Image 1 (cartoon, helix red, strand yellow):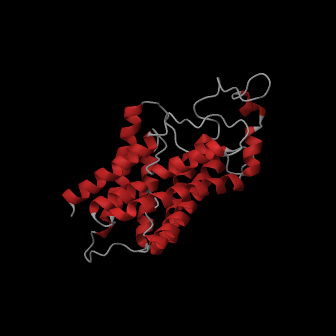
Image 2 (cartoon, helix red, strand yellow):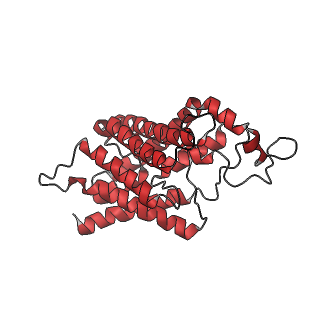
Length: 263
């Protein structure tokens, strides 16, 4: 694959992944959205379909990593050149940021309605209606549309949860080539990966919201910090290292496990 193939495929594929994945979070969260309160099943299947669409679009161009944890796992396994890793990671981060901006544009009216609603604003503002930075929570009222957060804040548990979930994802991707012909699953692999993501969300997503992808969390979190959203609250940078470090560690472990157990 050429450098331009990697850049184009990973940027577009990751942008679509975040647009559809962040989009389902916005649909479920925001007031004046027809899907408000649709629940966890909608989110998990929405993210699965997001992975399916992004991977299908980018598969024939860049290999559709769409995730630094996958790229690291493939580099350790030997399927990706280490010299290509920085380009993969940079393209994925750019795509994730583009996707997050597109979510904001798509739900622009709903964001404004939600963040100017007296019920929402009341928990975020002081007496004069301006954001009370001292009282604002670590995670603002719409941060969950952009990034993940734990239900119980415990750094070690949260990190371990992300590592375990990512090992499952990356190992499932690496083992797709273990069939009789040894040539992988082709486009069917995107469907298998999407179903694995749904399974991870249903089974392992409860504690942390299952980032399992550093740029899925970091790119939109950066966008959340930069966007002119009224009363948006904090971006919770104190937690932000966990959904980056956990998946990277998990991807590396999965690559090592594959070489030991399956290669």
